[in-house]
Length: 400
Image 1 (spheres, rainbow, N blue to C red):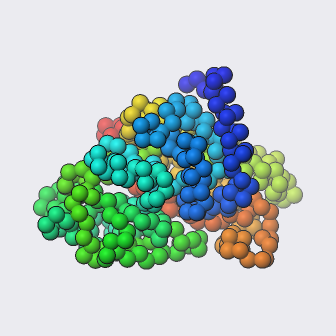
Image 2: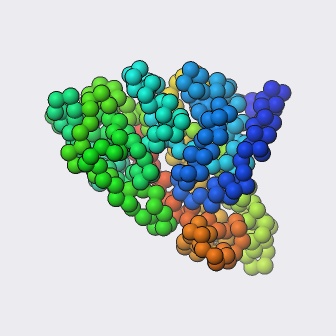
Image 3: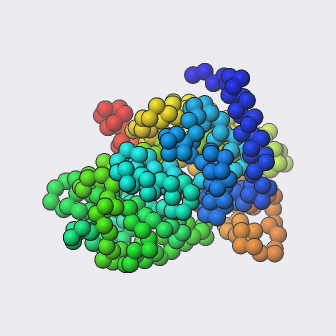
């Protein structure tokens, strides 16, 4: 694959750099740097979304008629890379990158005209209702039920590990509408306002001390059938399509390369037995292996980006990309934790995040490593567990 950039591409890169230098404030960069969870802080992400929206750069992968940029795959790659290098906060993907492609493919004209502009403007903030207690990796066993009553569904059940449900005003949700056939054949995809009577959100505090996920309860929640996406009992097809974008719809290698640069900085400054880690052959070997794996993933992501630019879905290869990126990121943050040694105190990042007057005791590069290490453990499970992805790869990619 030729990764040589044209003169026009380099001119575009300079335009992106100039924009980031002007619009991305030091305060926003610092806040993004201290983010230890999967998604950026809601207020930070929405503030950045408004800046990108004004520029017309908020949703590069959307069709042009709905607000997309019309960029080439190379331009999208350059934009992601420069945002990562500049330390820009990530936008919340639940609506913009996950639900939106579903609406483009399966939504009615009325659903597109209602939800997409509000998603883009930030008026609507979405969360995802997939996993349930006992139905995470085996999602087809979900039990949250939707029973028809007139023109509505009556929904009862619960969803768990629901990221940012404490902020969301809408949830896209999988519910069971038929129990007589194969489990996958009785699932329906609904869009539900969180203000609907009967919905309750309970927080779940992670081992890293973050309130990122929640449990959502549905007690006789009345949902109009017009809020259904796709045919009744065919929500499994819709859900799988959405998961392709969750698992492989966006490039992560620019962020991994930034992390590798941080790792090299730590290796230059930390020592072991009086010798810099950067001078230790064994430690250098670990960094080099991570660089090689990241480079290989980058090739795969660029190929995937080219497919998406042609209007294709990421496909089953997204499962391979998901597993690979998670393994690299987990190995990288584990190596960072090993390198910072006694600075890896649990919850040390909360000193600055919670606005305490006490200064962080230690180097800046060590402040959030432990919290990110703990949060990264969940990546093996969310979006489909590692084992489930291997089964998908075996069946859909290898034909086994």
